[in-house]
Length: 370
Image (cartoon, rainbow, N blue to C red):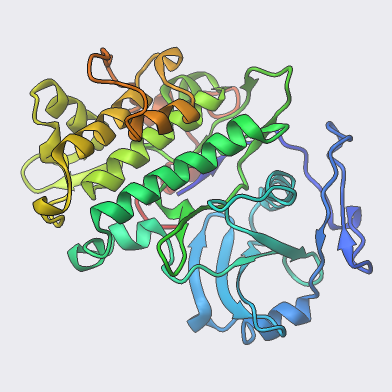
């Protein structure tokens, strides 16, 4: 479901020292950035996952497989094994470490360490009891019903806070580039944790944007980024807007209806907004007595504000949070047309605009949780 043409430098396992308690590396281009994480041995992780037993598999994406396990000290963890076939494996490995190893936030998944000792590279995270938001929302009405309006509201605000933190507080700033349902993990209390920083990019203070090949997931891609490769923090804001519409509606970014066939959620939301029927988009499994129509209407409008075609009209994440909390009045705010990429031929791949066969194949599985 991911497609990635990244300009990050590759790193070989020889760049690390697996004999020390920690290992580190420097990006050839940004040599002042240092990463230090705990080094696990391959044998430790093999024991923790019971030999990477298939029954312990809890997820699979373009970069590898995730297993649940338990360390010797009793900690339950998720072990992400990077695919040896993935040409992006080294890049994702270093990008994820560089982005998340030195930051802490209640709505960011915690990285315990990693391993280069063995047939694959591994990253070790906290285990999330309730899997991912994709698992819940795509698991049928019974699963979705577990997410009350109160829980959905807190999930939306939690991810918003995580993004505001990495966009505005962390130095250098971080742009995630792959905000989507399957990258939102939920702990035993349904507290959301933003995960999978393998496609993320660092923004230093003197950098306002990056020009790069496109990476992300169809349906969540900001149009200016998809077409030109012009990446800013507002690209993540767009993806968050799509995510917000999904959380409230219980639908996916690209959904299917028996009457109208496949459709883009942002288009449906925009049409309902123009017809003053936006509240009708709320997930049908929610008890109407459990939420305020005014509040869900506000959350949906914030979603539309975040996906406006002109990126300059989208709010920064800290402002979007204030909008959701009704600390910024949006009642009289004029919302403009949303941006949307509906033709994959428009997406920039490196210096080209035509997708490769492997890219097209991956898009055909775009709604599969990863």
